[in-house]
Image 1 (cartoon, helix red, strand yellow):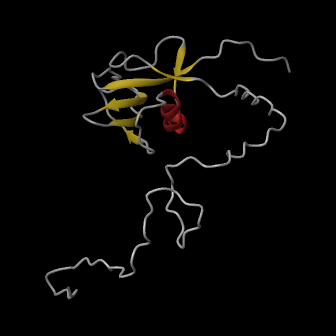
Image 2 (cartoon, helix red, strand yellow):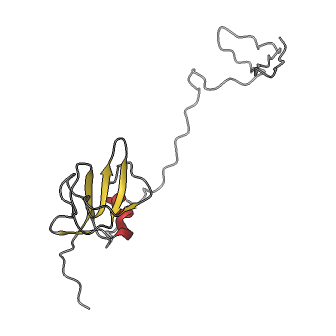
Image 3 (cartoon, rainbow, N blue to C red):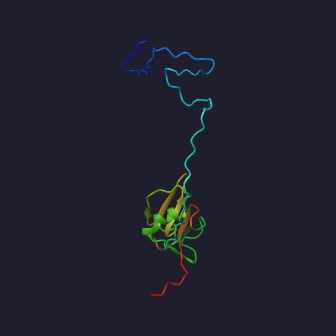
Length: 165
């Protein structure tokens, strides 16, 4: 067969190896073969596999120390146009990072949608659209209303006293 592509086709050709295959044996022999054995073999090996060396046990991993960063959370979906009592609004500069921390496991974008839209929640929130979730920051400060597609991102207020200075 010849491989001659033209302007309308693309041929995929296979090179045929004309070398004869080595003869097979019905039973294993002690004589070496002229070609390597294809791997993996199904037959058990004559010698055991060398076990890994055992050293001293490794130390337990060091637990991560808690950070002093604020804790963010997602408020109930479609409840409130501002963060609930006992929490505070997330500033625009923290909104995207707060969304990723509070919404860990959600498929969130790596960009912030900054809007000024009266009637939607004010501040940082998730917009649950059809098939996607957006991270929004609304700079409006009046008529902050909940929406069935929104979920506020809020910051927990730290009630612990500050250390003495």
